[in-house]
Image 1 (cartoon, protein in one colour):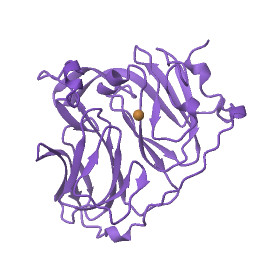
Image 2 (spheres, rainbow, N blue to C red):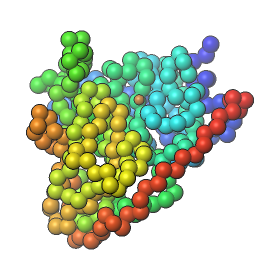
Image 3 (cartoon, protein in one colour):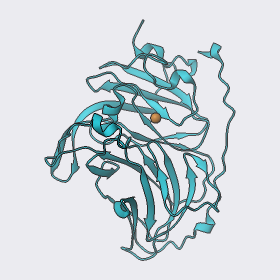
Length: 311
Ligand SMILES: [Cu+2]
């Protein structure tokens, strides 16, 4: 049988078409902490974190994945209700994408919301080294946000010298898993994002760590949970903290503070104490927006019918 490139992308529509997105599975050195380069990172880009993929709901999307990793890989589109043969599971739905090969994935995402993508070969290691990316499915409707900010939350397991240490310990497997040693958002430690004062931001939080269970809260800004795992949540459901386990997502409507320089802080709680994950800083004159101006999210579910004969 042939390699992965031949098994994927049999959709007639997609043949010869230019891809909407290209991912390059890559090994790279990268400074997760200032002045300290970590060797042996892995990504879906040659020079930095996996890109945020933005798709239109219902539109056929082509993603070409080139493997320059030095070992086999695939891509699984976490949470998307798409045809099984595009699901990225090696030996089950496709052959692994071997070094130097390019595989074409073609699918139409039936639901809008916040999702993510990751490999399914040597999965824990490839993810632990960085191969987790955000996937956003946009709807035609605009709920009225001024900005859209994605935070890919994950830990990396580094020693004091900034290099990877043993990624998983068997002994920890029975004790809640092996935790990383530095916590990141978008491959940065406690990043600060500048946002227009008084504006409305759709904050998309994705827990792509496989061990940590996040207990998230946002201090210093008005905010409202609007979706969990891509499902709109009722206005009345406003938990004190949002618990996200591996693979889960939360969408939060945030009103950026009014005064220039004022900061909202995204925390996770560890042993009862808040630990900062990221900061949102207000810049400029207040836009004076209000959360009440946002249209509620609606769940638009398309029926998914697959025809075997089409492939
Ligand atoms: Cu997954």
